[in-house]
Length: 154
Image 1 (tube, helix red, strand yellow):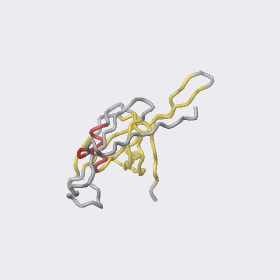
Image 2 (image 1 turned 90 degrees about the vertical axis):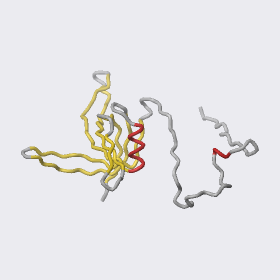
Image 3 (image 1 turned 90 degrees about the horizontal axis):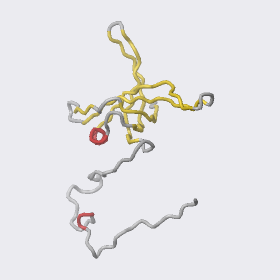
Image 4 (image 1 turned 60 degrees about the vertical axis):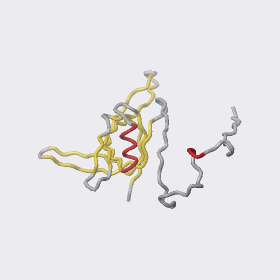
C-alpha cells in the first residue's frame, strides 16, 4: 500500500540535481515542515515540532524543480511516503522519504511566474502536420480568444 502525503515546508538547501546511471534526471532536497499554532494565552503564534523530509523528484518534474526551487523557499510537496530505518555503525535512525508527484511554491508567502514547458503528446506523431494550430503560427485573421469577466459574489 502506498501512503500519499502532502506537506508544506521550507527547502533546507538548494536542490541537488543528478542523473541516474540510465540517464533519468533526479533531484533530491530536504524540506522542513514546522507546525504552527495560535497560543491564546500568549496572544501569539508559536512554532511546534519540525518534521524533516527527504524528497526525491524524478524526470521532467525534477528538472523543473532544479530550475525553479531554491534554499529557503516555501513549497508544497505531494507524493508517496516511505518510512525507512537506517544504521551506520552504532548510530541508527528513521528517515521519512517522499517520492514527489507534484511540487510548487506556497503562494501564501510570495508570488511566482509560471512558464509552461512544451511537451510532445504521446498520441500525436513526432512530426505534427503543418495545418495544426500553434501560437507561433497564429495570424491576425484567426479568432483571438479572451477570457470573459466573471462576476464575484462579493
